[in-house]
Image (cartoon, rainbow over all chains, first blue to last red):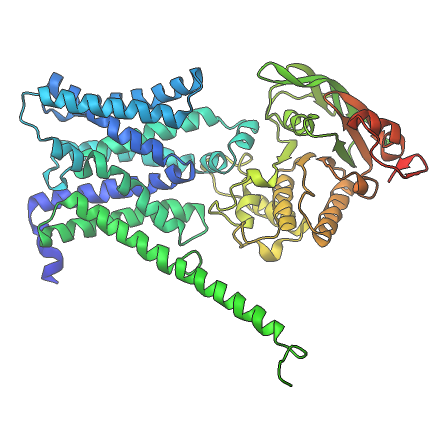
Length: 301
Length: 250
């Protein structure tokens, strides 16, 4: 069993393991909401808009985690709320408004980072490095998890009504506006806390893949959330483990493992998988053929 | 219409979309234990009326009262059943899961379901004859069964006024029969059902009363009183049927 546990004898790997468990669960759990609310595109935009926030944070405060955290947080919130304002005031719909805002924000981030005196590699923020998480990063992730998870769990039922039928939920007096904003804030907090580990580009995979995988395997809302969390942990930890032995970038390994799990579910899910679907179609085809071949339909005799 | 008449009273109701009125100064009163068709051409405001009653749309003028109590926005007494194409049928939930949603507002957010809640869900499933299918995912149902799931949710919610948007659309004959049976039962339990409908042929067999709309209220009353050739012509702006029997257009 040495090969299994050996990597985690190093302190930096233990920290990475803790980070993977925390953000893997947080992202996997939240992913169910994001998927059912059809916010994947918005999540993508938000993740890219973290970059200018980071750049401003570095410019103002250097590499202090608190500065980075606040910078990224405020940039993402500005893009999220800005898109809603833009969409309200003009003919342009929210997805288009988001697309414009986040590419502008991302470009601003690239330009700003070229002014940064501190030697920071852009690649680091694009792809992250879970092996480099500091104790402060861990505390941020821990703090976000402690705030976000209990709230999401407590609001599980009203959120379900909101996701299933927004207009009906509103008519029944559920504070749908507040819950929607709450989801966006939870999303931004989660992203910021995952930034160090997986980076701006790969964030989305960690967020959506576990939930999408579980979605192919079950028909239960609680199972989607908790299963997503569990799968997020499993995928992150095994991705980390693989990256250690193969000497490959950790963020990419994590997302690849999650992607592979999604592919397996897509192919082999007993109910919604591709193979099950093909087999079922064939079964129905043969059944209807056999029905036609009952007495009276035989040729030759 | 019956002894304890006029439980739902609507007065001077106007509803607008972006300042353009879709319903003008509509007023009527209905009593519980009735199954009422909301009829009218496309764009007549049938869905608008149902949604306004459900609190989904803002009322510009007018008032709605139920049992003498004026309704303001959200209410558990009213249940709106959406048109089928408005529902995400791939949502990860089962028949029972949807019916349980009817109890969500009665239970505190973080509390577990009590025995009473579970019994209410069981009874609602039983009432629409879906007990055997309660663990099915909702897309694996027929059209009529899907309608019944939402009816069961309204029952679990203990709503008294059920607002249904075109429930019969696209149902085959047996499913229509099944749904009609459930409607009869709910009516006899004292519920008030308002149902938008477009197939005039089936009105006399399915409903007790009608509301004829065309941006405004043309007529309301029992099928006998109000479902007349004259009123229909005024509602649809043309003669709808050629055959007339006993003043009823069939």
